Length: 165
Image (tube, rainbow, N blue to C red):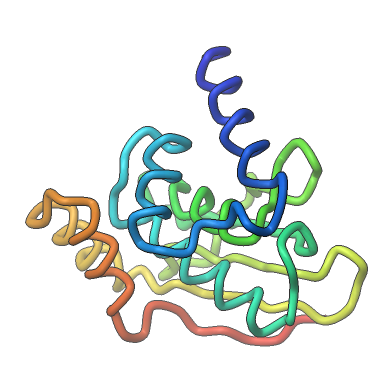
């Protein structure tokens, strides 16, 4: 456990050093998240899409956002949180990534609330539980990480988004 924490910290430190280190290509995302998360399944790109969308909507740069992740009761793990975390450069060590003990509402895979660290309106992403069978099928039928990444990145209706105060 300690070794994994140190490894994860090292990767995060490398990623957060400067804006030139941000993963931008599918291959870079796959390599980075495989190291941090320990593998690359279909839940990770869900988080990447949410994080990238939030940065664009909020006009934010890396390290300017605060993330609270609510896992659905029927979701096996909060893996998507790792994708969001790296996409926006949030960190539990910096107090900008929070995994809530409270579950997201019934019928949801996850709810992610992302706000500017300096205040102002944020955005709330709701991922429907109806996505779960699709993600499971992607993991079951596509063994290559790039195929999984591409399959999730092209899913329609991956999330709904609303402004929060």
